[in-house]
Image (tube, rainbow, N blue to C red; front, side, top):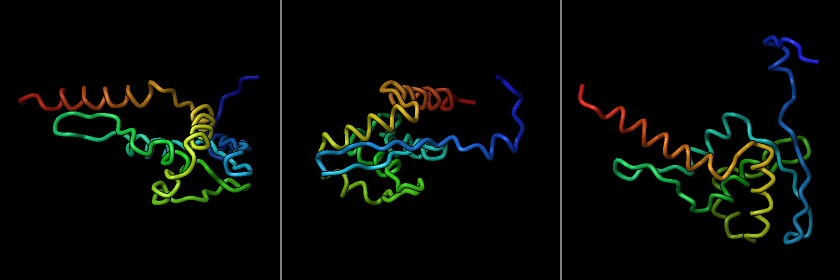
Length: 132
């Protein structure tokens, strides 16, 4: 079943999955889409912050930030902008956690991934700050 993929077969393949997620706290459901590579990088950039020479994970409103990236309409188009994270962050923590869990599973994000990113950034900072 394995076949060699060419540029066209990769770029034209629809690999962003959409899953319907019941949200009883909101009396309905939403569609959650897999993050694209660009969106995942943007999410990681949003949750890692630099403080002096150190990098750390900023957990503030992390679930709402991810929800803004992954909640879509039936056609896969985002319904929230990045700026909506503050508004969405005021919604039910249970609802946001449910969406976060599905988005994490669909996008291959583990709890350790963001922590590892912060460690890698700190390590890169240390290696780049040597005298030359």
